[in-house]
Image 1 (tube, helix red, strand yellow):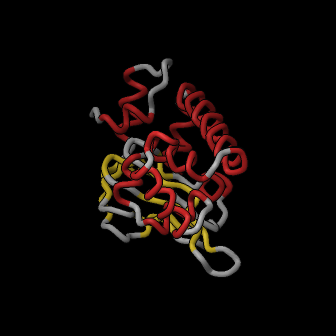
Image 2 (image 1 turned 45 degrees about the horizontal axis):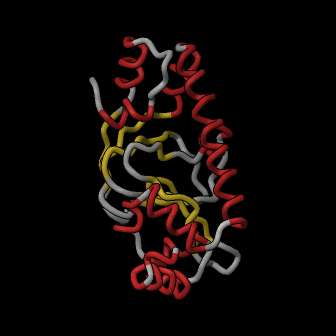
Length: 196
């Protein structure tokens, strides 16, 4: 079994072909509809997913009950809530489909078995985790060091699907700005693209 999304996510130079095939075969194809919850606040994650088609997001509810988007998951990315899955604790986050989604699912028990059996999978896991940690650190720094316009442009460049399919309100909360500010930024970019 070969699949582009799985190949991209498990791209690691030391995997042997037979190891990759075993990892791939441990995944099951699943489908979600727009608006379906992949994970809900208060529940414990028992699997992670590789997104083959579609767009999903994670969000938390702030102290006023407003939804704040914490992450957008685009095609060929892993949909995961790391602390809930690996620490076996209820999540504070919700993960919901913005569009219909096609995913490859692997459950926690199966992953654990393979992780201990295949040395290269544990090496891949460490490499993936450090890369994700770097990305989250980078994003938290950029929230303070980059202008809202620059953050929007970065999102547009890195994840254009988000701009295409996610509602303005969700994008604004992810960027840490109000809907009105984001509307203004978008208008300025259209009317004065060379100034940015």
